[in-house]
Length: 430
Image: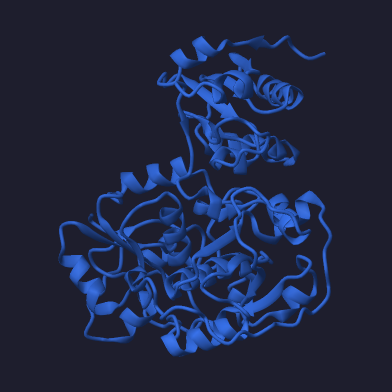
């Protein structure tokens, strides 16, 4: 028998926004939390200081682990809200069964909170660039999804030398793009402007094309010859970064990648779609050169008081226990760089992703970064071994609207290839 749930009023909830003993739980999809208006509510976004805990996650056996990872503890007062009262109730009951004693429900988000412009909402600055599977599905079915005002788009399934990832199932109408089209294997840096122009035109992409990218997570294994071939989810964001750098004006990422498409149960295609080349990309490449930092500028940033080089690698890489790659011998880190832990290894981004591969709640990323001195008032260049993880961290900061963010493209690979460059190993004293 379910316990009786107690409702909380809008006024009482307003009084608890800054109460550290309370946790406001948003059980709507992550896309609604970020800013999408999925139920025609007056304003998009989430209640100030709310935590994102989508109802979808109750299907996972390790739900309570996700809750604890978000520092939502039994001693906290829990206030659950969302779109659907039944789903609100189910999550609230789940908390009660998990040992949380003070649980309340709030049913008036749409008709009272969202409708009242005086009540505070927060949202991801560039939420429009992180789209849902439903948004993509509406687009390919010929509709005009929310915040889309264009007449030409391309869906791109990104991978690294793994067309089987594409041929084994993809979004209908999507073309495939190897990351090698945009980055050179000799350096793993972005290709030259001339090469980028040719590659984008070959794939039918102009500066004015809306490009929706996604990849397929296939459980990367460092023991494989090419582990990155199973990390298409990160490869998609690498391609997105280079496209924005080149000058594509409207680049979107499918939040959660192919996993999100599968989770909803949309149609999967096995057709090898032909690419339709175009004659001219349309603008001079790079249109946004400031997004990519090379080694000379990285060295200057290390000396500056208002800039930081941000290391988006795993801790074993950072302390020099491993290089992280089967093709990089030197181990260690760039002295003076700030550590921004990616996760377990070079092919995973657990600290920037949720359990379902969607992008992590941005408030949590900000908190981790600020604790390490990574703040939006500084010029930031994110780097990893070769650019993929650095691009994903950059994407997070860019989505937040941070003004001076870039990728140090050379990363540890380029830095460590020059024996004259200093390096450190062991536990940092910083």
